[in-house]
Structures are given as structure tokens and as C-alpha cells.
Image: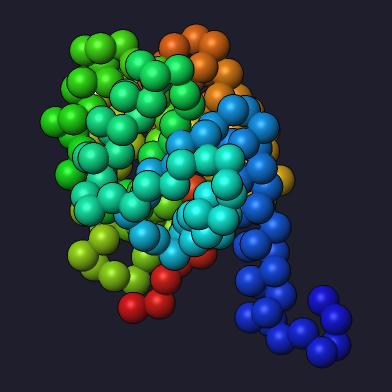
Length: 182
């Protein structure tokens, strides 16, 4: 960290590094459609997808729309990722039965709330239920806790989704993204 850089600026720079690597890994693995409900944990990935003329970036009004978009993208020969916060998972459960019933390859990346260091009591219940819900829906769950694990985890998830036809949820834990102040 340079003398002129504050601790907050240094933390943002580190965060931007792994978030840029996340986007680049998704693109390198053929993702051409990004759907999302705006979320600070996905800000850089969302912004980059909006700026990238070679991808479709779709803002959603609710998370379950992204499940249908991803299934449709697969039917059209494209690769899609749904970016959402863990608190949005509850909106998707019924639609995720379509992923399993139709045996769609599916990737979602969730920025976690309600885990390590969470100060907002309203986020705890859904944050703690996220992994059990995903597993009950037949998803493979991969967690990222350190910046150096972002690329290998996205590469592993991509293989599982697009080579093995699995439904995979990648969790960006609060150890990685940091707990929001409340």
C-alpha cells in the first residue's frame, strides 16, 4: 500500500482485483449472458458486463427471472450466469425446480449475507439457509473465501456446469467480500 493510499482505497483496490478476475474467468469460460439484480457485491462484474459489447447484460426486476433466462440461453446455445445476493435465493426456489426437472446446466454466483461478521439481523436467517436450500434443490455448492481462490473456483464450476451438465452455485462469502456495516 502506498503512503498516499488510505486503507479504504487499498481495500477497494484489492476487491476490484478479484472481481475483475471473476469477470475475466467467466468470459474465458464462454459466458455471454449476465443477469442480475443490482448488488454491491457484484458491482464490478455487473458494470463490466454492461460495458462489454460482446455480452448480453440483463437487469432483472426479481431473481427468478434470471433462472428462466439462463435456461433459455442454454436452449439457444449460449452460456449464462445469474448474479444475485443470497437474500434473493428465496425468490428463486420454485423456478430452480425447473433447472433440475429440465436437467439444465446452470451457474449462479451469490454474494453472501448472513454469514461471517453479519451485523444485520434481517440477513441472518436466509444467509444460514442458503446452503441447505441449494443442496435440497440439487445444486453443487462451491464457496470462495479468499481472492486467490476466485479463478480456480470459477474454472471448476464452469467445467461442472458446461462439461458435466450440473447446476452449480458459487458463494462469494463475507470473508471474501466483507461484511456490510449495519
